[in-house]
Amino acid sequence: MQLVIQNVSSAGHVPDEQSFLTWARAAGPAEPVEVVLRIVDAAESAELNQTYRHKSGPTNVLSFPFEVPPGVPVNILGDIVICASLVEDEARAQGKAVEAHWAHLMVHGMLHLQGYDHIEEAEANSMEQKEIVILDALGFPNPYEEVLRYE
Image (tube, rainbow, N blue to C red):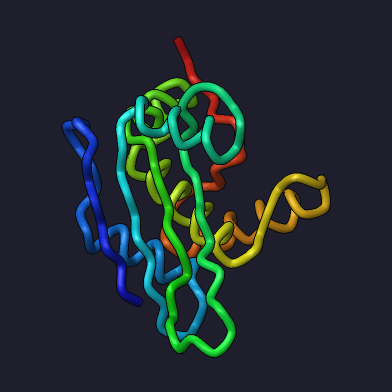
């Protein structure tokens, strides 16, 4: 797998390239593919979310699968855009390790590039189960379990 990372965010800490590559490979197809990961701030995430999903405000992850024209020999899977500030904010709010949330969003984005979705309940359950299995194999907890916090 070839992973091109474009970090244009102002986030203080972003996982290293090897971590992203490990997570992408764990969730990716067996054949060699190319993926672009763009790490952005909230403003760019909000703009992309409005333009492509017609929803206001930033979102944690967006996926843009590449439609390969017939007869064109390329293995481009697509682009993933992750909003760094939301990763940190959501992890903190949900009581999760930031690295685990980064891994989850990378896996989530990779599955979207391969046609998985969560619009219908059955699709959502299937996608979530696949994410849980992949993240477990990577040593991360179930991202859908509620974390108990004692305050």
